[in-house]
Image 1 (cartoon, rainbow, N blue to C red):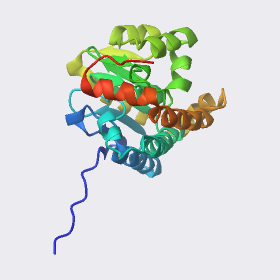
Image 2: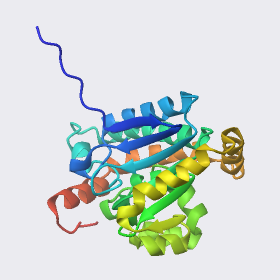
Image 3: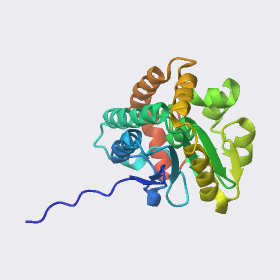
Image 4: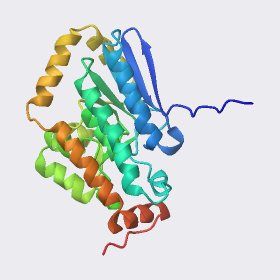
Length: 264
């Protein structure tokens, strides 16, 4: 009797010379997040956090894009329990974000292609971000009748300011790499072909530094304005309810059917 084959991990971890490379590994669907992705991202965060040899982390996406956010097709195939699906997904996604932000090792987002929705949240939760010249950044939530998750409602205003964050959320404005740099969303922009090397150089520099002090700095900044964990809980509740609402259903259906949503 054959043993069932375990599904391939949607997030992979490779550690070499003190640097952990965490790769979002669903390139055929732009690294969108389904339930397994949530579990795997949390598993990756826990693995990296508990490894005493890890002194820096690079987070990047396999293929052409960093992460398009939630897997809307998977969400709609959840058997009708969209709220339950989103609650489960955000529970694991948000736990992963907390572990990445609380671990000692600095986290570098190496952003290739598009970072949208919760993918934007993964850029924001990273301590430093390097963007390829062709990268694009978008919240995308209200375009499909949903609300922010993945830390975006907490960290985006802190990165770009309240008015700019509100503009991005309400108009779904897309930022190119240079504009993202000017707005403070990323630290550096490099040619597309130099992204991996630039992230590696920065990771090597950080890995050679005082990683425990880095961890204390991370936690001091995270706690300077208390509320990340509480806000993540609010995000999870809100997007779950909105995903199950008439607006959420229409927005997601319109996106998948490639038509304009009929808001009522």
